[in-house]
Image (cartoon, rainbow, N blue to C red; front, top):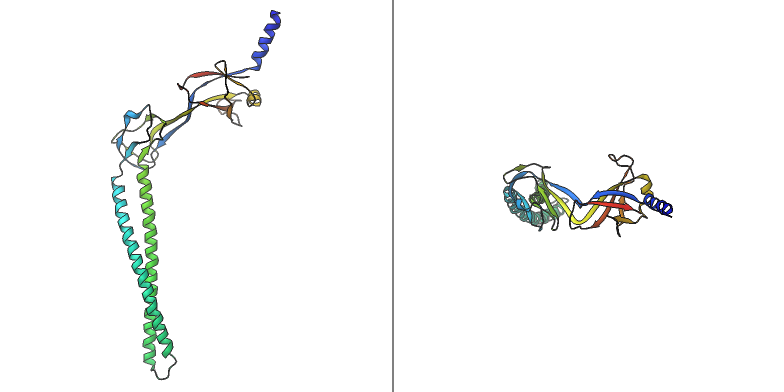
Length: 264
């Protein structure tokens, strides 16, 4: 009887695959500088705390804001000028129309001298040239307004990127800069963790991959409702012949704890 019981226990152990994984934050990422500038303020005390969604790092944006204000004033001026030129174009087109009608009236009259006809034609050509010149100015003005609008959008984007915020509820794990530091594009600023959920990463054998989706997961010898979230379809580059696998769990009380995972 004892022999038969030993065989049953041994068989059960063969049917269970055991792995170990450390509880990690759901997502870990690093925020890097998108713009260059001097770090003007930094809430260093926030390290290790959950973000309240406020500005954590402020990069100098004084000149950007000054240039933005100046550019907005210039844009308003250009837009007013464009309205005036547009009105001038309409007026000049009306003058052109009247002179064209006057010329058409006299061009075939034998009672009018050649000189009078040429003079009226010259007036018509001058009016046409004036309309063309105004239209050309209007097109150039549109290009200038478009360029200035793009500059304003770029300045707004740059200013927004100089106020570094961490999403509310995320853990501010580590900051890499101090007040007075000059950062360039790509300089690491802060490491952030999404602790709204936890993640377990294990590396399954080829045999376990086949049964993983239908397996019951036991965590520290306790049956759980957790499911395999993702299995990579190619073998891992470091864990040879194993397939990276992720299990998403509710936010734990403590991260970095080592858990025993069994697939039964």
